[in-house]
Length: 357
Ligand code: ATP
Image (cartoon, rainbow, N blue to C red; front, side, top):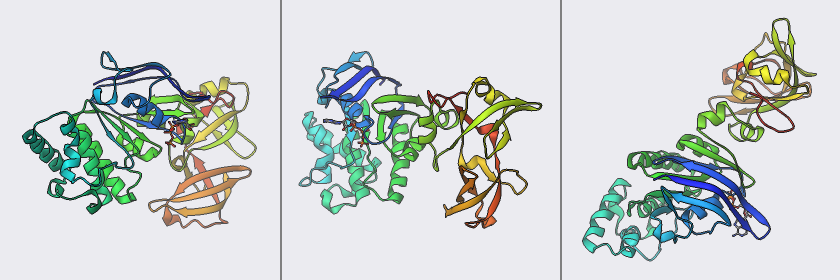
C-alpha cells in the first residue's frame, strides 16, 4: 500500500514538531525516518498511525485520505522500543490479541498465531509469559503481534534500541528479510544511521521538523545535497574544511593555508564558478596515508576500529580524520603524508549549505 504525505505539519502549542512534510512512500517500500533527537520522526510516525492528529496537511493510504480515521481502522502493525507486551498474558495470547479484537474465530486465531510464531522462530514459546523470555524473544513476540493481522503497513519506532549490539545486528537482518518476503510497506524510525543505511530502500532525513532529503542510502552517501546530510551520514563523519577553488594550467585546484591539491574538473565546476571560499568535504576512507604526498601532518590520536585505525591528523590548522591500515603501525606524534582522493570530494556553498556538485 502506498503512503502519501502531503504538506503535513504538527504543532504542539508554540513548538512546530513537523513542518510542511511531503513524502511519497511506494507500495512494499521500506522507508527509514532518520535524524537527530527531536527532529520530528516519532511525531510523523504517530500521525501516520492516527495517534496524533495533524495540525494541517493530508495523509493518504493509497487513494484514501485517512486523517479522520481511528488507529484501529487503519490496518497497521506497530512495533515499539518498549515491546509493550501484556505481562499477564502468555505469548500466544499476546500475539492473538489483535485477532481477538477483530472477532476472529478461536480456531483461526490458533492457526494464524502458530503460523506467525513459527515464522518468527518462537513457535515453541507460546505458553510462556513475557518475563520468561529474553529481550530478543520479547521483540519477536512484539513483531509477531504486529504481523498476525496481516497489516497493510508496518510502523517501527526504534524497535531495536533495548537490545544488545549483537542481537541488534541479528534482528536488523531478520526484520529486513521478513519485510522483503512479506512485501509490507514499512516505516522505521531510528536515529541510528547504520540501521537506516543497512535496512531501508529509501531514507527520509529529517532536521528540525523538516525533510532534509529523501533518497536511497547510496544517494545520501555519494551525493549528499546539503552539508547537514554530508555530516550526518557516514561514520566516522566526513571531513570539512574551507578552500578556494581556482584554475591553474592543468585544471582546477583547491587551496587553503595548509593544503594545495588538484581536483576533478567536473565535480569542481560549480565551486570554480563560486566567487568566494567554499566548504570542501572528503570522507575519512578517501584520505589515505601516502609517504610521497606533499600534504604532511602530525598524528594526534590513533583509535583502533578493528579493520582500520582511525587517525586524527593536524595539517597546520586543518584537522583531518583518516582511516589507515593497522599494519602501518602509525603512532601518536608521527609526521605522515596524506593523499586526498579528490575525485570523491564534495563542495558546499558555506552560506546556503547546499551542495555545489
Ligand atoms: P527522538 O529520537 O528523541 O524520539 P524525534 O525525532 O522522534 O526524537 P519527536 O518526538 O517527534 O522527535 O519530537 C519533535 C519535537 O516535538 C520535539 O521538539 C519535541 O519536544 C516536541 N514534542 C513531541 N511530542 C510532544 C508533545 N506531546 N507535546 C509537546 N511537544 C512535543
